[in-house]
Length: 90
Image 1: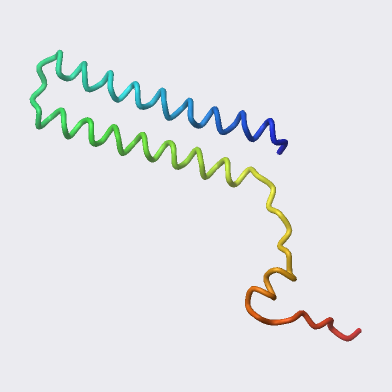
Image 2: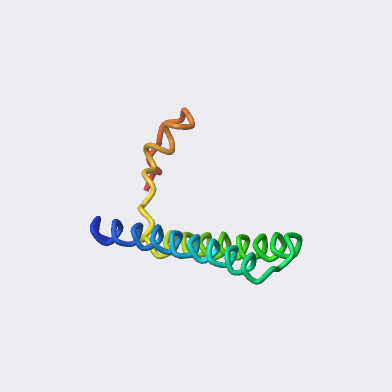
């Protein structure tokens, strides 16, 4: 994925988070305007907030999954464990 595409995707995720946050605020205002009890409102808003977090988490996981995995650097991995790579005999 190009750097520009990655930046655009990050902006999309942030935009989604902002829209969902605004919708939660609108739901809170609508519940209050409708005279829904504070207990019911709290329960509904908690469910909506949890659903929002699940949606954003899923979006982030799908984004991470769609990125090509970089090939692991065997030398860096070996030296991080304090071992040297030994070539296998043919």
